[in-house]
Length: 75
Image (tube, rainbow, N blue to C red):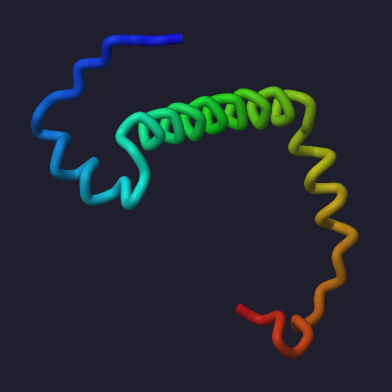
């Protein structure tokens, strides 16, 4: 599949600096793939969130013991 793509001149220097040793075409294909994956992930997480409930989450959290974290686990 081929597309004529017009990229504004003000992006040229930034793209050149970020793309490293890959071609402009490969850089754009990778950026597109990342964007698609991000959108699909967001959609998936939104659907999963609809299946959950606050009450269920609080019920699970209520079962956690109230003690200090183990050594190395503290924030």
